[in-house]
Length: 153
Image (cartoon, rainbow, N blue to C red; front, side, top):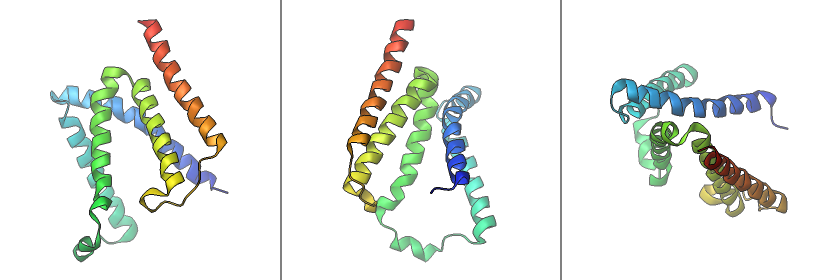
């Protein structure tokens, strides 16, 4: 069974995502250039990550270890930057619910595919009928949120 502390941690991390999108949008407006907000946010993230890494592990990555890293393993940094930039630009324009609904739907669908095919070295967990039903419900919810949005306008 998964620890309740880890579940709460994951929930808190997820709860911060829509807040980040709208706050970064406000930061970009305050700075006068939208793309300055992700730069500031990711700089702060780098500093916090550096401090936590040093405090917890009492070390930093050894430079010689970087030669052992496969190119694809650096791609996570690009994904983080793309997500933060996208949230900063899109959440204020299309709404937080629309951005998060699309982002979470894509995350779940891609996660199911990663599990099913064991992509990127993940453990293989075949798609079940329950998961397929869950994806259908998820996409139905995404469509309903968009339909509800169009009815308001």
